[in-house]
Image (cartoon, rainbow, N blue to C red; front, top):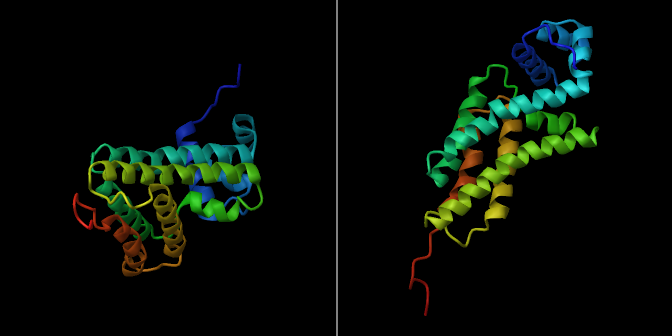
Length: 204
């Protein structure tokens, strides 16, 4: 039987997320983590096995409380095309509302961790791909409903939207303005407005 944790695990993991998010994986020490989590270094090792394993746990919790939660909420609306637009609008709002401009933990980790740790890099890529898959599902659903042109390649467009999203998250860390972030998003979102071919139109 594993050793019982003698601390508030949710609060501790939230502290770890904040620490990794603010400092980055490489620059975060076990002492930093223990301080932010409100526990001792020995408790950290006993409960999580060390910094690397704790980082993996923090990423999973971050996914549950950010992208997964937002995706589930937007998909429940039944308006797939608008869901993509709202996702980007909320991303801009969240980026600007953060006074520290920390960006996205996944995107930061893709730059900080992925080049040096293949396994963690694969995990980070998987979290980002969950967002890309959301874009793809929305495009396919909107195409089925006649709201997005069937000429648009759903897979390629979902990859493009993810690339724009990642770029915006990096740009936001430089204290880019709302106008700048919206200007970056606008051409990508305009792809969703390619005219839908109507029966009998354009045929000779």
